Amino acid sequence: DVSIGEYVLIHTGFAIQKVDAKEAEETLDLLIKMAEGI
Image (cartoon, rainbow, N blue to C red; front, top):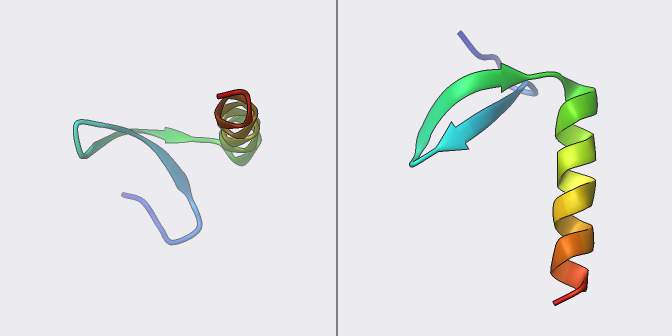
């Protein structure tokens, strides 16, 4: 089960795995940096 405020990995519209907050923040930061480089 997932609660509000938790992070999950989504693939093809389905949550497949919970992700801890640190990993989620690092991934979001990386995606933002990649988007800025385009």
